[in-house]
Length: 183
Image (cartoon, rainbow, N blue to C red; front, side, top):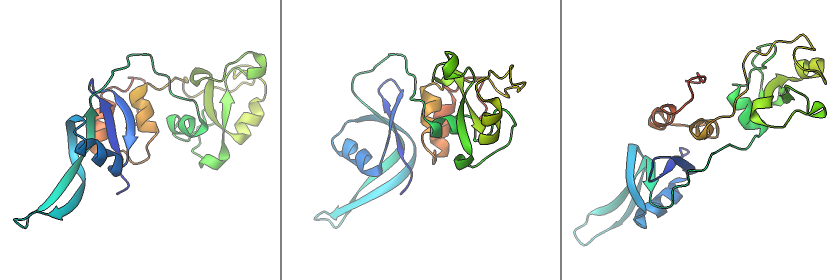
């Protein structure tokens, strides 16, 4: 099974992607307080004296008890997440590229005081990034196709898993920002 299980806290906030083994451990330790979605994996155990075989069905979304952290969440800025946010499209020329041909561009260059943060970074092909150089888009006469933004927690969980199941997507997308049209 390649599908991951989405782990939530008791308030319904995503906190991790789990393997089926991690999910099974939480379930047998009785730490799952509620679940949603389709069964993504069934584990078969031994037989009892009546000849019945035990089984454990793992749902695609589980919620566990524990502390709820309400602190503001900003996901880490990595090239793979940035490229996923921008759907592997250069934000200057609009062409879709393989990841190996993409680079991180700072809208306001770091050498000119720009920060290495979500709201100042976009995906750019190497050609456009070299053409822009150490200039702002206006100075380079290059128009941005989208405004850079920091993904919220739900968008981050979508971006960080390549194999999001339909019911997990339905759960996550209810909290996507209105500016996002990924699905």
